[in-house]
Every structure is written in structure tokens, then in C-alpha cells.
Length: 429
Image 1 (cartoon, helix red, strand yellow):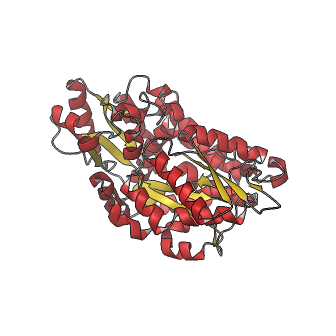
Image 2: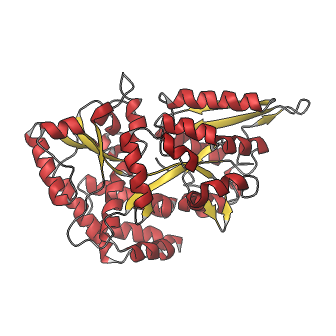
Image 3: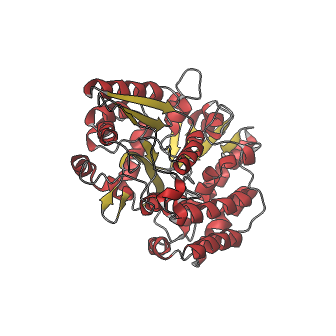
């Protein structure tokens, strides 16, 4: 689920006029009739999500005469590329996916995003603390529809074939599992390092395990990465890369696009596991001919711990996706966002395993056992750390991800990642 939406404009807090005349020029209003056409972009381009959202748009139109919703579904990475271009040309869709954190704060500083604090007050109250990641200075700019945590999705049949009887809880056990999978002729892990962010998640998670919570809180506030725990995270990742657990060609492997992507390799039985978020079952379903993904062979376990770590072992890396609108989008766009968070739509979202719903009324409809387990992990985690590149914003997060990708290629040391990150952070101060 990624990013770098405002690389040229918002990160430097450039005025809105520098990014185009307005944030959204895509909606149209018929002056005589008052009819409105909304544009809505999302990344559920596989079934069942695509059909679900097409029906949601039709239901919204039926309940709002005079409103037409033009839905565009696309692969996640394509959506990010198009969003970045749309923001800079003033053609952003009326409803788009927003990841929050520093990325959203950049947009708010540039006056690009609609404040929905009052217009969606009832929905904000229902979602409670789930909206905190999409608030800036006490105001709410988006409504999250899915929040989850990252962990290892795995093929239970392959683990059994390799003689692995229990999911690893420590990195010593993980390396033992990797050795057993290799001995059985099974590629252990797929990673979409070609898109960088799936590779970056490993460093984020090792940092979450290595660093005390107070250190991470301080880093978010001060952009100070001098604590030794950040170097330790790189040392742990360097050890993992040296163990060669990843699929062939992983440096150019995409995250989720097509059967040869990291998700596709897991879904089609080419590898045993992948580090990914709560979206993985839905993504895998869309990458298999029968639409079932791994089906009954789907397993999940938390990112393992290592000796000497200062972080709480129950802490999890995670985040979510929310619906938001450009500042000058019509009011009907906010109405569509509110409908997307309704009991009705969130129930359908949960029943189709499209993610982990944020509307509390929909939690009971999550039927996939792995996703149901994830809900419990999310709700019981000592800390859910927002993805670092989202938390720290585009410039710092981009430099961090670039350096981590270089480590996967054997071209950066643990200290290099810290130095690149700190250099980008210092430029922000």
C-alpha cells in the first residue's frame, strides 16, 4: 500500500496554485439540472472487490438522484502513479485512498484536502480512535475503512511438507524453518523488492523489535535517528538477506501485480511465505483462477522476535487506508465517503474478505479465520506502528526506502540506512 503522492508539491509545502489551478477538476455539475458527476478511484481491481464497489456506486446513485459516480479500479501501484500526476495537474479524483500520517499532513499544509470534521461528525464518533491517523491539529480529513497489521502469510501445506510443525516465534526458529524449506526444495519467502516498500517493511519491523517505544515516539517528533537500535535493525536485516531466503529475481519482483508478483508467487504455490498486510487474502484471491487464493492452506504468524530486543514482542507494524476528497470536491463526495463507512457497506466489505473493517458493527462479519485472528492481534497489540514511510512523510520515507532497497541489493550497510534517513530528516528541519 504505497505512496510518494506529493513528491514535488506538498512535501515542500508549495502553494496549491503551483500544483495546478485546483486540487480536483474531475467532478462536473450541470448548472441547469444541478446533476453532479463524481470520480472515485480505488485499488480493488480484482474480484470480488471490483464488483462489490461497482454495486456500491450503483446503490449510492439510486439513493442520490442526479448524482453519477464514475468508478475507476486499478492496480495499487498504477493508482499511486496516477494519483501523484493527478495532484500535480489539478485532476485528483473526488474520492481517493488516503494513507494518513506525514503524507496527509503534507497535503493539509498545502490546502489540498477537504476538512470533514463537521460534515462527517457522526461517522467520526462511530469510528472512534481509528480516525486518529487521519487527523491534523484536531481536524479530520479522511475516514479509514480498513486497518490491520503486517505479518507473515504462509502456505500451511508447504510448511507441513518441510516438516515445520509450528509457526516460528523467534528469528532462530525462523532461520531453522528457512533451512527446512530449502532442504525440501521450496523457495521460502517472496518479496516485491521491485516496488521497494515491501522490502522496507522488513527494516521497519526489525526497528520496531529493536527500539523501545519511547525511542520511536521521539524519532517521530524530532526526526532523530541516532539511537543505536536503528543500526541494530539494519544488522538484523543484513543477516536475513545473507541467508538468501527470497525468491529468484526478488530485486525486480513487483508487490501485487500479476501471478509472478510476490503475492502471486505465494498464491500459486511457488513460495512458502510472504511478509504482507491484512490485504493479502483479498489480493491472492484475485491472482488465482479459482478466486480462492491459498484457501484452506492459508496461515499467518507475527513477525518473530530476537534476543536482546527492546521493543514489546506484541507490537505490530500496520496502518490502514481511508477515503478522502480534495478540498474543492463537491459536498456529494463527502456523502459518498460517509456511505462507504456505513454499516451496510462495511458489512459487505468484511463478508468478502476485502480487509479488516473499522466500523465496529462490521467486525462480526469477518469470517476468514486468518483475518479474524488478525483482528485479535490488532486489538491486543501493545503498539501498532504506522508504516515508517507514511509516519515520517514522503521525503524522509523515500530516502529510507531507497537505502533499504540498496541493502537488499548488497549495496548498503546498516549505518548507510541510518545516514541516508538522517540526512533527509535534517533537510526537513
